[in-house]
Image 1: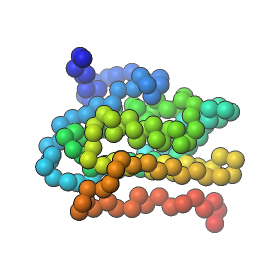
Image 2: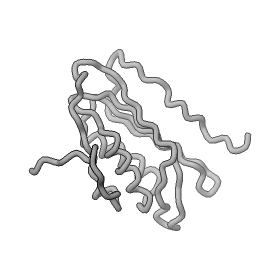
Image 3: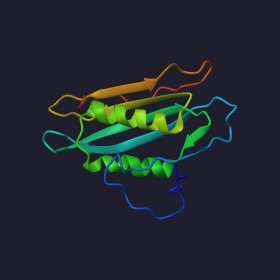
Image 4: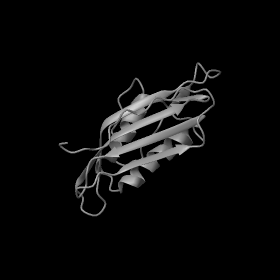
Length: 150
């Protein structure tokens, strides 16, 4: 297998699909320490696979790194590749979590997908790998449940 070149520090084209998007990883300089990394994606968009209408979500991705860290520019490009991708909320959320976990092999990862209402019903989707490492501080994700105008 050829070694992937990092996208960081150079101009790259925006990927058109999640499948063609490249997720990059870099060595974890604190590999012997358990700690939490959080990525917040407040403006995630994808398309409804039935109507083609846009769907919007607030994603929270928490992980305890092992040997690798997820490089943030590649995450941004991967997330943007969903803008023209048709999939249900559940599929998008779990697909993202599984792809990140496969690429960086964290000690633990969770993703919360807080989706804005479709048809008047908000859908929240949660997925994680295994159990939280003992003693790891994992703050609440801090995204309030949808309340409308209340």
